[in-house]
Length: 60
Image 1: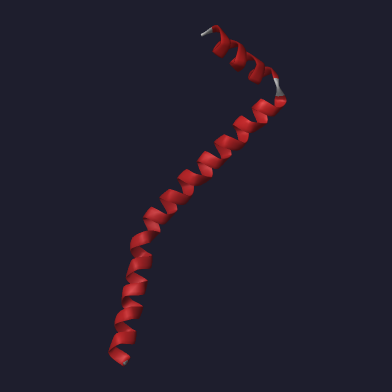
Image 2 (image 1 turned 120 degrees about the vertical axis):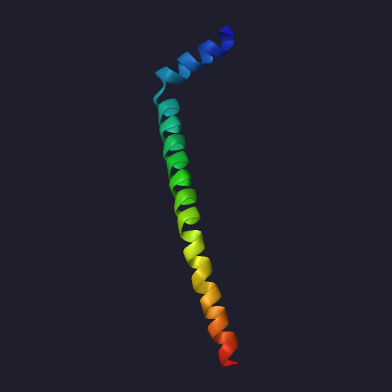
């Protein structure tokens, strides 16, 4: 337990550890926003492709 505490304290003191944490948080935020956007727009995109497929099928 003390080795974990020492590791966390050393990372807290180092700027590189702080930068890595910041980049990880940004990456997590971007991932959450991308997943939410794709979930929200997924049904709309599916409807567009379904409509295009039916139009192309009717024309052929």
